[in-house]
Length: 383
Image 1: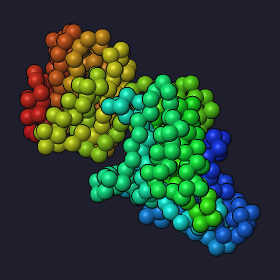
Image 2: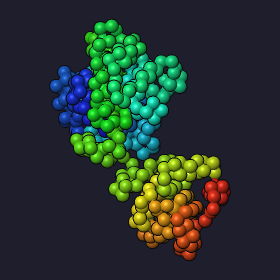
Image 3: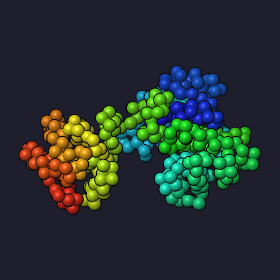
Image 4: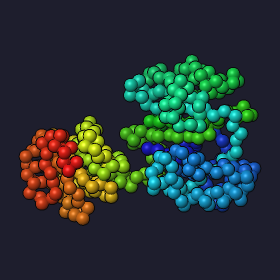
């Protein structure tokens, strides 16, 4: 689960991580009042769950409270389109109004879960203010990577190593090392999957400030992070993903035109590969799961068909806990609910009650192509 920058900075502050002075505004009047409290000038930042705000016009510098109000008025109620949002953009409902800071150096600090390291990895770079992916591609030698022992945690010497590697002045080695330790504690306490500061600013007056803040909380742990649950902003999420979440359906919307319905994450990845191999693109990742009933199967197909880009649906079911006949009846149920949205379906069913499931679909009157293997599925997608 993603949260807004101002929410992440509130959490940062609770862990002693220094941030610029400021607060969130939901109206131009509030923005002007905050700018006045900050001395007149301020930075007005659109609050959306997407990066690239500066390049997209979502961050504005105001030299007076009136300019802050005008900047907020121009942003609130609109949608911001960045390289991470797609053409529809993300709605702006609030802005963060902060003090103007004279930054001398911009650094990057992030923490993420690394499957290979089987734990948290700290990523740091002196090339702050840039996308870390771009830094990794163009100047990988500028990236410092430190794996954190899951039992011992981030050790003081590792924090010092990161500070020295970032090349901060000697007087800031201890504050930066301390910030690393605080960031790690925040990461673990809040069940994060990602924490990022980009940039971490070194100011001309010798301060270290988290100029930006990003926190992603692991969806599988959100049930035990009750305060974080209140920070969720559904308007920033894809409507189909929100709808799928209501029925415990693992769905991620993509930008292709072949809807995929599968039971099992590994099988879903393989099915997406088959779609690519057929010269098409998957419109989604969708794992029904093993314990789905007819209602859940029907909801899954309805969600896939709600994507206007879908021209064909690929179903790849390996019957086990989810029997193939149950899946087939679920698809028929969906077709009765949304007949106008139905699209041609390519269906591969193997396992428990596969013949029964295939018979149900063959006699359903739906536009279904039944296949026996992935090669036939790819050919049917191309047709």
